[in-house]
Structure formats: C-alpha cells, structure tokens
Image (tube, rainbow, N blue to C red; front, side, top):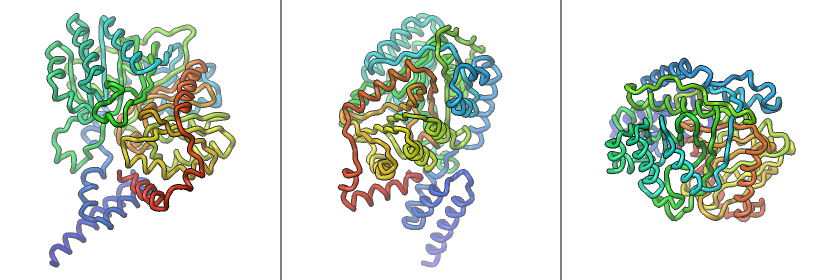
Length: 477
C-alpha cells in the first residue's frame, strides 16, 4: 500500500514540477494541467504524456531551422520587401504586415491578383483546370484528403500531369488524410510518377509520446501550379458533403485563387514542408519570382507552426484587431481564443468598432462548441455582434478589417491553430477583394441566427457551468 502511495506522489510531483518548469506555457495552461493532475491524477499523467508537450523535439526543430535557412537563402526576391509597405499599405495597417514578416520572413509583395471562388464546386473545377494546363510543376499539400469525388478528381489530375512529364509532388497529413495515404489511389499516384510524402507520419509512437505529442498536425491547404497560380483558404481536398462527418454537412468553405509574387512565397512555404518531412533528393533550383501585375494588389504569406516563434498567430490576430478603425468581421468554425485575442476583440468593440463574429450553430466538436459559447456573455457585454450559421458547418476562416484588409487561410481562432498546427494564410490589402470577402460574410450572416444576451441568460445553470468547465480545460484539450 505504501509503495503505491509513494509511486502516486512521485508521479504527481514530477509532472507538476515539469509543468511549472516549462516557461512556454501560459499561466491558464499551467493551472488547467495542474487541476487535471490533482483531480484525476492517473488520467492526468497519461494525458500529459500524450498531449502535454507542444514540441516536435530538438531534431525536428534543428532540421526546420536548416530548411528555413536554405529556403531564405535560395528564395531571394521571393521573400518580398518591407520597404514596399510605404506607398502600398496604409500607414495605420503597416504594423500587421511588419509583424507577419517577422515570423518566417515572408514580407510584402505588390502586383498580385486575387479572385474569390464562387463556391466549393467552382473552386475545385478551377483548380483542376489549372493542374490540367500545367507544363512544369504541381505541388499540393492537404490536411484532409478524402477518397471521395473531389479527392479522386484531384488525384486523377495529378496522375494526368505526371504522365505528360510535369513534376508533381503531393503531401498529406498523417492523421487527417490517413485513409487516403493507406489507399490504393495513393499508390496509383506514386506509380504514375507523382512524388508522394506524408507530413508528420505516425512513426516511432513511443518516442513521440515521450518527447512530443501525437496531435501536432500539418493543417495547411496548399496548391501551387507552375509557379504562376496558387490557392489559399479553408477548403480541404474533400467534397462539401464531407462523408466522414456527414451529419454536420455541408462544409462551407472559402478559397482564393492568387497570381503574382505571392505564388513564389507559397511555393517556398510548400518547399519548406517538403524538405522537412520528405527526402532531399529532389530539391528544385530557386524559382524566379512570379511576374507582377501592374494593377495588382498587396499580399504576403503568413506561415506558422510548432517550430516557429510561440504565440505568433494570436499576436497577429490581436494586431489586426487593434488596428481596426470602424469595422471588424470574423468567421471561424473553432473559437477557443487565448486571453490576448479575447481581450483584443472586446477592446475593439469597446472603442466603437463594429465587431461581428460568425460561428457554426452545430459544431462537429462538442468540446469546441461548449468552450466557444462560454465566451458569448463577455463578447456580447462588450458590444460584439454574434451570429450562428444554420446551414451546415461554417468552415470558412475569414477576417476583414475596415473594408480594405483581408486575412484568409487555414488558421482557426483556437489554441490548436495557435500552438499545435502548421498553418498557411495570406494577408491582403485591397478594397475590391475585401469587398468580395465581406459580401461572402454577409451571405453567411443572412443564413444565421442572431445570438443575444437574452439568449445567453436563458441557458440553464448546468449548461453555463458545463461550458465554463470545458473552457477552463481548453489549454489541456
């Protein structure tokens, strides 16, 4: 009996000291973990072993530093230039562009074109048309790649391209695309000459559990064609019906087709993932910077992940919110913010900015749904307008500022995107593109229900307690 008590105390004390020793954890995260360790110690020890560390390990961090050094060295002009801010970005928004450039070095590029796709079907059709026109190279990376109609159509297009001599590389996340990676179709792509690779594969499970965590994922959605066209947005390589979670369908996504120097930056971001997770035996020479369009717009890539500076994404979100003068509109499927982002949203509303947030009414994650709603009262009390989208799962991640700034891509406004996932986004400064995205946001709002303070006050005490408990455990989950 004494032996088991001693083991119990050693485990609890050891894990608690490990939590207190880590200086990369926020105070709420430390408290959440300590709460779990002391209330359900054995479950807590196992959970911390599986999910407590937000690092891929020293080897991967060192490798990533080497890869990014190579990418920056060979990228040259593709990285963009902060000097282009003057005369291209309004002074009141320059800080966000400067901050975004500080993360991976992708600075401002001018002379881009951006076209918002009308819907998921149009987006996939245009993407496949671009692949079918490719003459040199096609690179794709998806977090979720299903073996459904969309997944098969894209893989067929890659096979056609490879057979006509186009260099094709396809990468998919080891968890989100696990069924596709194990499928006959994945092998068919490889047999046809498509270079395939897995991002963050499930190998060395015990080592990963001991020194990292299993749910660090590559959440990016990247498509680059011939160095002249790329796509950025929330849309995975899957049908809107999303048959693996059909009861929440349709998935409502958003995708932008981009041309100009921003394509070269996206190519570099893909190459950094390829070199990190695949072999080095196919390293392309530095691509020339894509042609600029004289009437083009300002844009820059923002890439973040667990090997980058901690807190980069929430800090950029907060900066964008702090720069809003009149209007801030946000759509996100998963809203579990850290204190920095929550304070920035409320502060914007308090100083008179019209802040509108759009969430899905039915979320595929009951944990996120509960945590998100725990913040409703504070948001509403601050003057934030909240809508819940009714017709499917609103998966579009959009942020527009004052009708001129758009931030769009794969990043959710939650702790997973902030700390655990590799993400890719684009920051754009253009009134016309932002107007198109704002119009899409208005379409979401038209198909939503308004949430008022009276609605929140009508929730039962048990529901409110439940939501707050889940939110308290947010840093753990």
